[in-house]
Picture 1 (cartoon, rainbow, N blue to C red):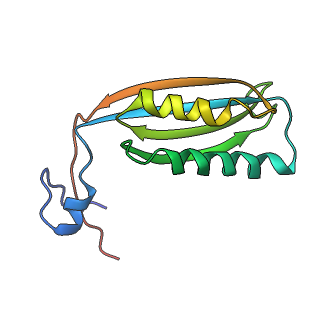
Picture 2 (spheres, helix red, strand yellow):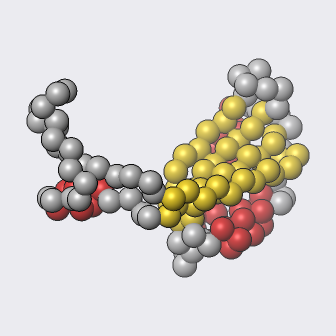
Length: 127
């Protein structure tokens, strides 16, 4: 690994595509669930697909989705969704709108975190 040449500005087209935004905002949602069974993952995926469908026109990117079962890191069952978004309030409203009638949900917890790029470098790995 000592022969890696780090550069501060992208040189190639591929490196240009990797450039990260100067600022990044992550929006994370926990859906606190009453119960977990085999249908829950499918139900959550269906609802999140509907959220994506309705969020056209909002600047967002989907980051991750999963389910934490009780006992894995706590006592609650949590469905989590993480987005990168600019228009966080619009995304929050749409998310709540889509989950407000979900009988398995106890509540929704949301976090908005803003990050600023401190440093970025590029390199190629020969394989």
